[in-house]
Amino acid sequence: MTTAAKAAICRGHDHPFAIEDVTLDALRPDELRVRVVACGICHTDLAVRDKQLPVPLPVVLGHEGAGIVEEVGSAVTVAKPGDRVVMSFNSCGACPSCDADAPTYCYQFFPHNWSGTRADGTPTMFAGDQPINANFFGQSTFATHAIAHQRNVVKVPDIAADIPLDRLAPIGCGLMTGAGAVLNSMKVRAGLPIAVFGTGTVGMAAIMAAKIAGANPIIAVDVHDSRLQLALELGATHAFNGRDDAIGKIRELVPQGLGYAFDTTGINSIIQDAWGLLAPMGICGMVGASDPADNVVFNEAAFMGGGRRVMGILGGDSDLVTFLPELIAYHVDGKFPFERLIGYFDFDQINEAIEASESGQVVKPVLRMGAE
Ligand code: CXF
Ligand code: ZN
Image 1: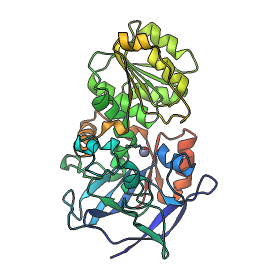
Image 2: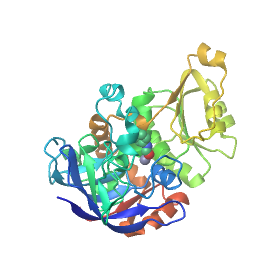
Image 3: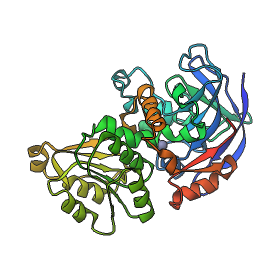
Image 4: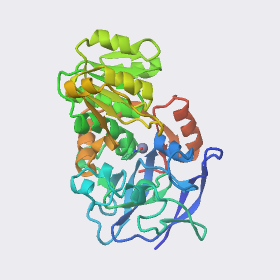
């Protein structure tokens, strides 16, 4: 059975997103149809709009969706109709990375997330009688309804029954990336110093997670003072403006060096500086979207001699089944107060929401598609 829905079509940077009528395909055995309640907007959506990623346009984006399951295919076990769910990235479940519970590094990431179709090439969405690119991150949740998959849907645990879905929506990308980088990838140790470069959603999540891990000091670096103020409220012990010799101030504060330098900016000179601040055994974690032409240069003797590490991190090494419930539990306990980052917009305000994100006015815009 096909399903009528409304979806925001992205036709590129020079066109506003346009909400239009679409039809969802009938479900395959491992798929779920979700009525979308809310969806966060992430920079990756905008990178696709701007053709910085190899996702075909026009496309229905959105990959931080939350909603209520309406129907499930015959092989689905993760959720049933009526369940409240959050959605994240998809993965194949059969490659060496998925076998090692590291699905963010899925060998088949592109066909399952960015091809515009199911991994087998079939469309999940139609505009009139023509297929349209969708299945973005296995969801395409800038829409009222979405087809998701057994591997990218997580049922909201009962402990979070009182937390609204429009708050939980963004947990499946930026928040898990920042928190996962600290808790899963770098495994930040209590008492060691960390500096977080860039305080967007990923950086703020990293700061909240660093507080959970007991890092000390927790240093936030950004060029916007309002963001630095919020970082201090969320767990940073120190905040330095990048335009005002932040590197020198970190060196002064932590003369023995950083246990962890976490870059969310992707800016080559910042990564270079961050690497130079590491203590012996220090880890420089990188999650920013870098210019594909950039290379990091570092001193080989300092790298080897001090046992320093540079770590590329995707999606905070999140294994969705275990990590999303863990983050939701931190939120319920008041230890991961990411609601402070969110600004809400109605679905038909999608272009205003994007503008608010790009101007820096809102850290994490969330679109509301319908009531819970
Ligand atoms: C992704 C990158 C791949 C793993 C999940 C998160 N980032 C999206 O914006
Ligand atoms: Zn994202």
